[in-house]
Image (cartoon, rainbow, N blue to C red; front, side, top):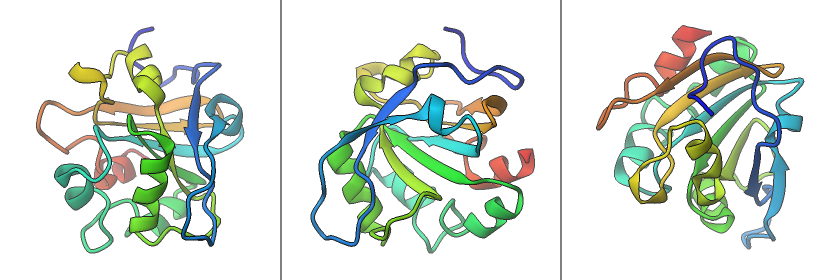
Length: 169
């Protein structure tokens, strides 16, 4: 499959794994998340990063004390975003722990942490990285139609950060 672009239909059969948020400190068991089905009637931002807990992914994009998707969630919601889905190649337990590290241990569906197992989705759109990691990119899907899809040039966070995504909405 070619890279996604504005106007494309989000592909069928896209599945990730995740552990639904709970009030518990212990992680649950991973379950499938059928993104094609879940995104069909929502406006969603997929934010893909090469790995959980890595410096660029954590410090520049996700910590609440820097402009990021958590800090600007209300602005995203005001522009119609229902869900921000953070994906990486890490397994569902690591992704769940990453969410909990940011205080996301309450059940919610506006920010979810998903595992792109074996970077299958990212590779299918040509946006995986060497070594099997997911690439750094952002995709906005509105009721199954891609409205924005940009992959970062090497070593940068200019088209997949929250400000670029907000500007596209």
